[in-house]
Amino acid sequence: MLSPAGGPEWRLRVEQVWGPDAETDCAAQVRAGLAALTLGNTEVKVLSERNWKVSGCDARSVWATLTTGGASRVAGLVVVRTGDGVFVSIATSMTPDRFAEAEAMLQRSFETLQVVDPRAIQLEREAAITRGQDFLKGLSKERLQALADGVSRVRRLWRPGPDGEPEELGWVEVLMKRAPRSSAGRTGPSVLDKPSEREEGLLISLIARTTATDGTDRVETRANYWIAWDLGSEAWTVRSEQKGAGPKSRFEQVGLLPRSDGQQPPVLMVASDLGAGMEEPAIWPRPPVGYLPQAVALALGAMLPKDGSAPASMVFYALDPGSGRLCQRLVRWSRENTTPGAWKLEVQNTPDTPASLEWFDGEGRLLRRQEADGSCMDPSTPAEIERRWRAVGLEP
Image: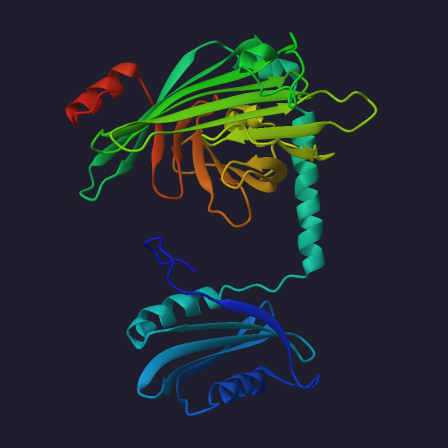
């Protein structure tokens, strides 16, 4: 559980438990839970109890102070009866000084619980993957070529400072153009790649610089992401180097999805170098449906239709940059009611990570990107970047 400030505050233990018989109700299950807490010399004082419904199922919560040898803590227990003698149990604990804040917040969250048949969740997930695959199948060569306009776009990275004033974090230059696969750069050692093909596709090139607020350290990145017009092959290279007063470090990653030879399914290969040499590549067979190439992921908001015809939610298989694993990525696409003609893209890279948000105008131009930590990326110009950076003593 997270507090409004975003830091981890409470740990919850969630498990399925069974009562002694099919007639056991929530009150009996809570009493059994409290009895287990009184083992030994622990004194239990109930602070509050309440009943409510969760998706039509009986639910009961109890908060109690547990005192052992002069030391006290507050424990919370929620049980939801999901079947005959079957319960979901949620337990937590905290110091007494946190109880007033925790009870109000956690109780509100508990009252929004939903009981859903796992089979229904699986069916919806499969349907969302199908929607993602249908979207990818509908991406025409003409749609991708329309994005390859060869125009350089600069974006400013910043975040709100403690005093409310923006702090400059960096800048990114983005260029989308038609190019052969070889333009993605050297796609690694021979184990990863055959001689570069001349096949044309969409190339997204990124040049970025991020900096510490005092300018003493910076990270410079160059990346190229290439995708064939029919999405049948992709390649990318990423190279980052940390410079400045602190320790020097570098990172390199190469990826390749060659075309299938018709005998075996296509295989995605990714190798990384954290400064000690290129590692052996991680290899995954490309998922048969719903695989989201890196270049398409980068330009997804520009590719999605702005006429209401796109699904509100889709799931793709995509490489998670944080873990380096192939994960299911949830995407939500909706109209932005606060800005006429704008659309909002919500992307959750894995089920366990917070979502990023992007806003686009009706032509697919980025209005803003916001990460879960509050940092933002806005359209800008080289002149604005230089002006803002020099104003705070940074070299752009």
